[in-house]
Image 1 (tube, rainbow, N blue to C red):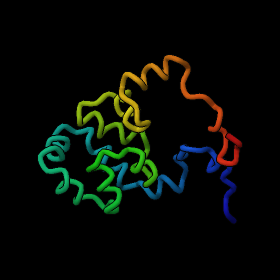
Image 2: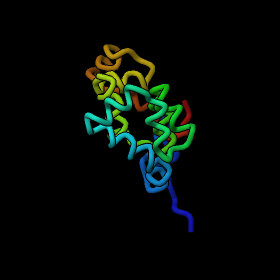
Image 3: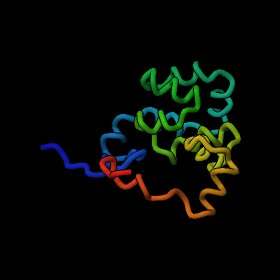
Image 4: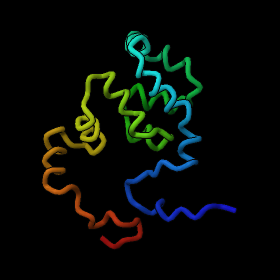
Length: 129
């Protein structure tokens, strides 16, 4: 029996559920490996070679290499694990979130200070705009 997933109707939102967890298992394990300094050093020395040690899909590896966090999330990445990539690159979570929205860090910060995004057009895919 298929599970009802009404949250799939929220535009621009990927919920990290059991299916996403299974899809992103190795991607998230790679991210967690970056908690160790020696792994961060190895990754930064040759990113592709380090990624090839993990049973990730090619699309996941390309998402990491291009630092396309939205793509990584769609491929099963959990933002709390993906934050390890940003930390390895010396980026704050705010910088990472800004890059995911197409905003600069300052634009993203100002938007959040101003109350965040409007809910209009963001409640469900079927919502009239």
